[in-house]
Length: 410
Image (spheres, rainbow, N blue to C red):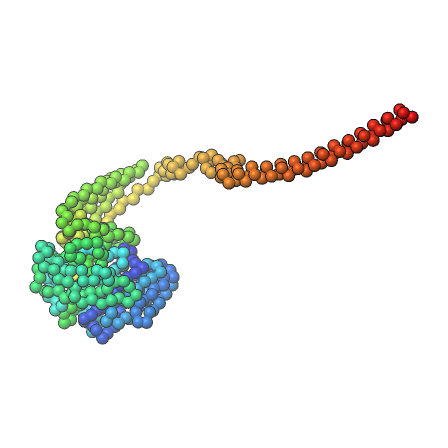
């Protein structure tokens, strides 16, 4: 199975969903792919399994019961994608593959339209991974909010604080629907769609187009540019459309590039030395509409398809300019000037011949008291010795005086 696995879909906590109610007595096939060396993944199944992927890019094929949700937790981020089949085997046409949503990419709202290929299927299901405290609050809501359908089939996920829920979609619905907590609140969850008929089976994650990088090569491969989802969970339910315009200017000594990003969801970059043409990125406005309407130019991965995306409209042209030695030296001088600091202002120079002052009151008091005690003790000994010396001197003088008187009388 050849899969395009973007870095934005890397995660350390990923929940998988079973192919219920399709293959209740079979095994679902999963593939783990390591993005880093020495990746250890714990699968909270019955029993708990531990998989070690020693090198980056190493894959491991795993079979798990198709009757339960599973939580996969890795010590390092990894990829996981599932292969679901109609009969639990490698059916030639009745199977599909879908990547696992990392927990960090969960959103608070998804847009869903029952397109004609899905309408031709016998059964269409929406499955969500949501926290236990929000179970029963996420609904399929019409655009005018006239109808709300709750996800009525839920199952706990072992080793996780999340639950998985199913909803069988009425194939007669028309228009655009939203999968969200009603009324809209800051509840993030992951959402998938899968459908089947007699000989066909399709599945895909909702909102995948929001996570892809706008810079795609001509071979439609993902570049190593991680893209974070645009947070919309704090948007009020009655918010209005707000247009945002951001202008960014990047200028160096030889290259000048200006990029304007507006809510038209079209990104165009032009410069004399650097030119890039890309397809519109599926961006979002600050409204309750979290997706864009697919056009002929945009690649919408939210629609089920068995063919590869059309790569003819995707172009990536980069013109590189070779810098001369003088230009390189000038850039290096600027970098050195910005990174150089005065050594005299650093702490080793400023504190070289200084002692750290001690301004504590306790140390001063103890010092004065110690000096007083020492002086007192020394004074007592000195005074005692002084008195003894005085008495001895007096006795000596008395003896000398007596001898002198005796000689005179004699």
